Image: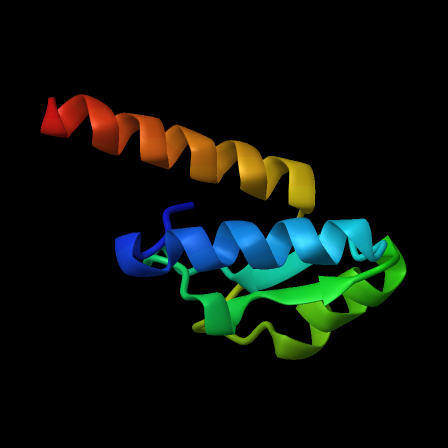
Length: 87
């Protein structure tokens, strides 16, 4: 999972805000492309998140579920890799 560099700060802020409001599950289209802020869907429980994945998945697009903590960890990892490249 990778995010667009120009949106990563906004995504981190949005994910943290949703986590504070109890929306700890996130669904997104997992087709191997970078993820945009518009492609994230937030849910309070895993049942609703799984239902969203089921309803939106097709033969072409597969929706996946993750948690806010995993997204934050991925963002931090992507940012640290970017810092290593620019040094």
